[in-house]
Image (cartoon, rainbow, N blue to C red; front, side, top):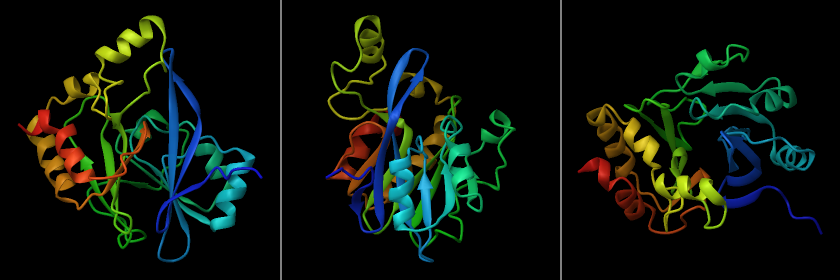
Length: 233
């Protein structure tokens, strides 16, 4: 029996691990999340490569009505999903429209959840970072926070040679997921970032999911306080 590419992660929430993406010679695992909305449709967060098996599994759940690009770096597979579900509305983080003028972006994400998912998801736009402006989501029913690139973790041995050294120096292979050093240095407006993080730290988080790393499945709120303690001090 084949294993479904969609794995349940809570009521109305599924995760899908995609193919690896290569950035500057570094291989990254990828992950998407699928959320069932109140109208029965689906929201897909950070879409990964759309394999035939994943498309079939998603279609079995329902119709994709919302696509979410949570920062300006996660855009590689949006066109595939738009082609598969042409009526889906594309919501993107600030900065993506300039990076991908070929994509039709229907709405730009901000601090207020769209009416289409306000009952299921809360969100915060994390300001103050020069690399990207990331929108972090909170899935209320499962107590799950969704991060894209601000938290990462790679298993030891994932990288070899000089890449392993760079990954270690960049805090990408810490014992638990951490904010990579390059993103820490890119927080040039720390007061704005702290204001965003305070809202995130107020969420009753139980679990934390990220696009690149193993999910944290317990004590999510305490974990986030540790992960961002360097910024909040």
